[in-house]
Structure formats: C-alpha cells, structure tokens
Image 1 (tube, one colour):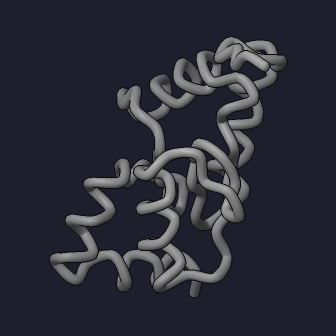
Image 2: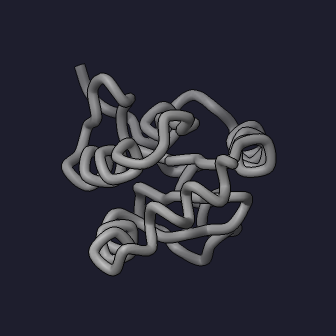
Length: 116
C-alpha cells in the first residue's frame, strides 16, 4: 500500500471544504489523521492542547488530499505546514504557536471566548 499525497479530491472541492469548515465552526484543526488516530506528532500535540480547554473541536483529516489541502490552507493563512488551527474564522497557527499560547496562558481564554 502506498500513500498518494495528491489524493482523491480536486483542488476546488478541498478549497470549498476548507472555507466551509473555517466559516462554520468556532474551532477547527486541520490535521494529519483523526482525533482517535493522529498520524503525526505535531497534529497529536495541537489536538491535545486544544482538548484541554475545548470540547467542541472540528477536525479535518488532510491526508485524503494532502497537496490540495496544503494549497487551500496556504491561501487562507500564508502558512504551508500542517496542523493549522482556526478560531472564530481566524488563523491562530500551528502546533508550536498553539503551545506558545498555552505557555503564556492565552490559549484557554482565546478558546473560551470563541465557544461562549
């Protein structure tokens, strides 16, 4: 079994899914894998940090069409790496930025404000 990062969805389908997820959810994590089975350490770390303070996190597994998701997300954030976190439609950052926010005590109030 080989992994094809270009995947099964077209760029326009992915772009629409990304826009819809960002607009329709308070907290969105674009990650590699699923909450039950993250496929990279950075995705696992970001998910764990978010779950400390928020129960309602929309997750999107980008592995289905990795290249298309990278392009669509970069158009929203100018950030090409995954995972990516959006809160109230605003790009927050990746795993390291979320960890820094948590260390400074800013992650919990940011998530609380978005989900209240």
